[in-house]
Image (cartoon, rainbow, N blue to C red):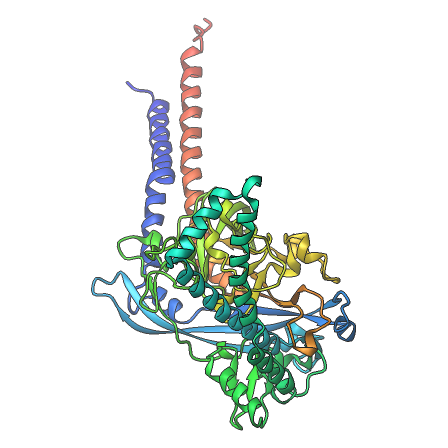
Amino acid sequence: MIHWSLIVSALGACVAVLGGYCGWILFPNMVHKKVEQSVIIQDGSEQFKRFVNLPQPLNFKVYIFNVTNSDRIQQGAIPIVEEIGPYVYKQFRQKKVKHFSRDGSKISYVQNVHFDFDADASAPYTQDDRIVALNMHMNAFLQVFEREITDIFQGFANRLNSRLNQTPGVRVLKRLMERIRGKPPISWVYGIITSIFDGVKSVLQISENDPGLALLLVHLNANLKAVFNDPRSMFVSTSVREYLFDGVRFCINPQGIAKAICNQIKESGSKTIREQSDGSLAFSFFGHKNGSGHEVYEVHTGKGDPMRVLEIQKLDDSHNLQVWLNASSEGETSVCNQINGTDASAYPPFRQRGDSMYIFSADICRSVQLFYQTDIQYQGIPGYRYSIGENFINDIGPEHDNECFCVDKLANVIKRKNGCLYAGALDLTTCLDAPVILTLPHMLGASNEYRKMIRGLKPDAKKHQTFVDVQSLTGTPLQGGKRVQFNMFLKSINRIGITENLPTVLMPAIWVEEGIQLNGEMVAFFKKKLINTLKTLNIVHWATLCGGIGVAVMCLIYYIYQRGRVVEPPVK
């Protein structure tokens, strides 16, 4: 007859096997399927409701570089700045859904954004604080004007060269120059031919010094006062409220040429400049973002492939951007114009250690790759930390196969010979229609060519690096944010008196942090829905596995012990 201990031991082994099967196969598959179902965006589902209205507002923090020596900068001194802030805003996002695709795998929407100033989080700072900051709209106008004039004459030069190259006599002279260059016996012939081409160059030089152009610049210089409210420097004294949202007013009741200049600025269509009810114009950094959105996004719903949920498929009905340089004259899409990833409000599920993911930011017109850094814990919720890499704005240029970011739209600024900016800076001119330069906050990691020309910067990777902590199973962001800084070159512009003594520097204006910290209510909800369930399943897994093994081993030991006992005969 089988001993009872063997039967119990066998039952314990079966329980242990069942615990192992449940813990390593059954439970993970159940959770995987449950997560897949929960992340897919379907009309009327809980995920759809969270998609349309984010469960909590994002944090939008703005730090302003207050200029402390503006008068001396006008005389050529190195700028000194002081960081002020943060000015904290709650950013509410609401999506207005347009339609689902027929198969339910895509959803199109327009996103409305609203900002509310958070006085408690901003204290002791208020929106009425006075600042002295870079006059962005005047500086942008002058540099855009300079660039367009340069483009006009460059186009003239190119057309003239093209015409000359099509002239048979000129082609013969060019071939003759190539053959005799550097040969002393007939260097006098080379000198004659060179003088001919020097004469051609002089035609271009005469056009660049056209009295009509000089007169145009003189009139522009004379009307700056009427356009930009009698500026005494390239800096403006204003309030935080005006600089960021309400707008710094200019073009107030202009007349004559000044009115024509104001009309040109208005017709340029810049998002940061809005016409006021009295006909004046006003510049603000974020006023245009506060309200109804215009861009139409199409994203993946996750149906059929949950790993692609919220991945941007189209922006304004296009799979790619038309902002940066393309890979060839045929218009083949370059890596710079590709739209990859989500909008950073959520990420695909089932993250793995060592992987990477993309976010797309319409504010800077590019996709950004984030790389796994380490495991983290956020208020008891496990996750992974991701951060930007060197390929964000440090490794840019032909040597990194992304020279499409080198738009080379800025004249007479600090840049490399190939037109690319030095490491740590990205020209957003073609993105924002304004000569804005992107860096990390306090020019973290930027070339010394830029940092050495500004005093008051204090780069700190912990404070200024972009990162995000993500719950690995669901892709839910726990905390973190995008951190970027907006700058403009300050420089002298020919015949513009207010700029004549300016140093050439990359001047910081503001830096922003846009992100999230999961609040207590969302943490409790997340733990109840997922973390506590995972803990319970984990307890069941290890309790059955270890309990079953323990019972099986103990009963087996007991059986062996009983078999090994020597039965003594009874004493008579």
